[in-house]
Image (tube, rainbow, N blue to C red; front, top):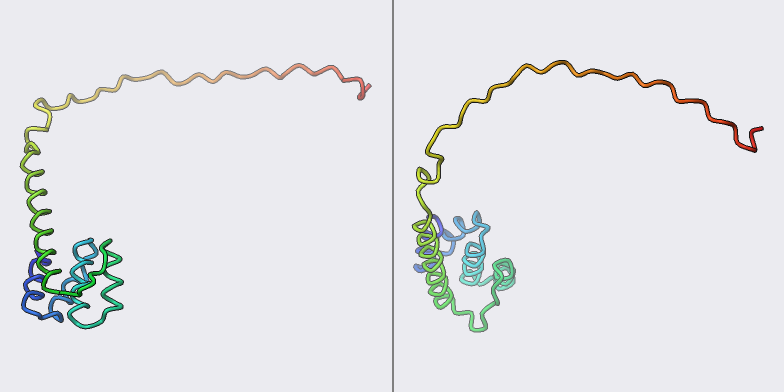
Length: 130
């Protein structure tokens, strides 16, 4: 996963390499990582923008290390939840029908008959037309 690589770059303080990766990730975690990149860079305004995109409050202490640690915890939790959900799903082979579908036969239909409508009877003129 590219985000894991970006996190390793962030942990080493290499925000330029991390930025190359996270700028292509529009997920909320990717936006959070992007905010941390700009925090490390010293671009607080841009960092705030990415925190808003991630739906996260901007940290008062601006401690990038604490933010990276929290990001790792969140990513691990989501990965574990996704793995658990995938394990609970039955394999695709079990959900497929056991018997093949029967071929459809089409019976010949007689052509539709068109009924001709007789002309409507003329209406009696109303009082104003007389």
